[in-house]
Length: 162
Image 1: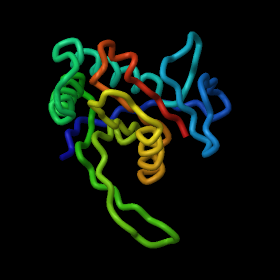
Image 2: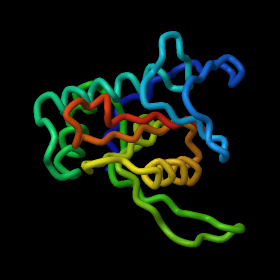
Image 3: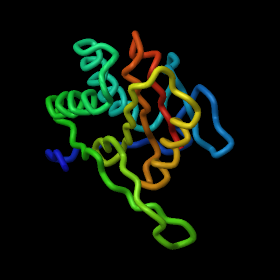
Image 4: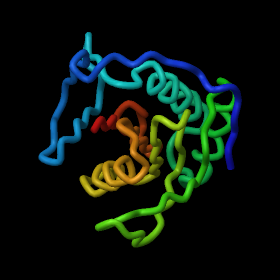
């Protein structure tokens, strides 16, 4: 389902202008849990807006619900903020030039940021790996992994930049 408004234009600096803090994985992905002072990264304004929406949802609902409840609430909040997104988009996965299957992603905001939602006791490296694979499948550079089952939402946030 596409929740569209007029697309927003955003100038992007060249790759060399970004300063990224946090860990860089062997696959080239940059993963950070919390932004550091002065940190710059692609889609910074958009990811901040998405995180702000997630914080509003978490403040109202708290931890403990199913992922689908948080997805519904976050979709509502994104709409209120005028952000375009698709929910449960099906992405074709290719290998060696052929389609090998399909993958479903939670939210794709402004066709630029993949948002994967969780409601789990603890995030594990597999969750980050899934987000990295999804980013590659859709051709996006930036993703957010948000675990709503935390007392403080900031403890359940990860930003991934390819």
